[in-house]
Length: 358
Ligand code: NAD
Ligand code: WQD
Image 1: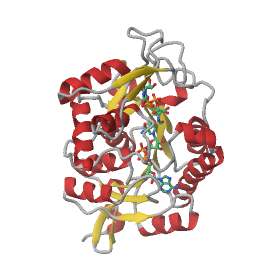
Image 2: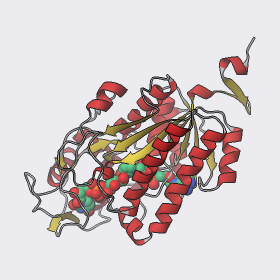
Image 3: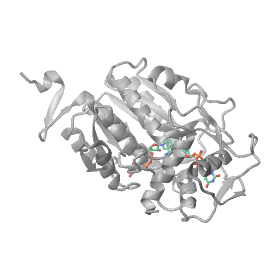
Image 4: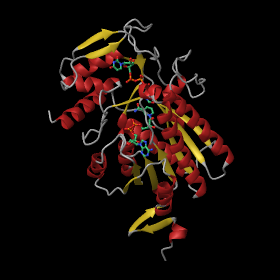
């Protein structure tokens, strides 16, 4: 006879959910969360999305449904609101949480540090608190290569010492990593993985979901696609006098679908009980340094267009170069970036064209 207890399944409003195979995705309407939800569903997981839509649109949930053909329970919830979060934990059964919900604009965090400390830390601590209270064992946290700052030795491994944070945003990532480490140590139920993303770019090949920055983009690729679309007049390249082969900064640009798949690999590891430590960290990048000018040239080549750009002063706070040593993610998660830079930049342009109706 079917036994929810024995089979680890619960019946929820007529939907049968297996708690081991169900993931709560906070911030799942956002750029990385929506792509990760798609890949989780493709891998056989059920996904519950919560988001307060402070930096996203509900359309992305429709996009997830259209790509996967699956229903996705979605609730508008602010993760800083403990009572609302409690209801989510009481309503749905899941063993794993991926916590994306955070503000992410480095410049804004300098101007409004309290906004960042409040949202990013309270939201994260609330999630961890609920997981402890409701015995939910697995949490995946969105960290960032920003923790490495200007590293002395490249590529950076997970053992490379973190540098003092240069922005409140970066500080919330370091503090959240430390909170997670301490909580995993202290609370028997809790297992955590921090994924340190390098520079996520591109869009889903369907062009149904992608990055949707509000206002003037801070990041390179959305600025490039908006310039190509004629929304911005000219791209400013921030400095060509760095100590790099062509004088522009080097970064590790990771395709968004590859990044999403890294989350699936990490959730698989947690769900299978394969973690060697209760708290683990993985770099998620390609391992290939790419300069700003190389990225621009590739964008022009694959999309057959010319991009107006000019060289301007360096942007304060930019590091010269950072890219990942990906051996740990490759060997332990069994994950590797697959899409080429050209494929990714093509997808970024296809997405921009679709949303601008070009
Ligand atoms: P995003 O802004 O597109 O997605 C974040 C989502 O969280 C948004 O939909 C937003 O509405 C939601 N959100 C924010 N605060 C919330 C709250 N209090 N309650 C509920 N929802 C809330 O950003 P993204 O690029 O998808 O980033 C996801 C995560 O990855 C963030 O934690 C970010 O710091 C981290 N990260 C991003 C990058 C990057 O370059 N995109 C790099 C490294 C790390
Ligand atoms: C990439 C390169 C710029 C815009 C930021 C955050 C980091 C992480 C990812 C969240 C740099 C150059 C950019 C432009 C340019 N986010 N550039 N003209 O700075 O590596 O990282 O996003 O965790 O924390 O700091 O990414 O896309 O802003 O810049 O020349 O208009 O492109 O100087 O070399 P960055 P980016």
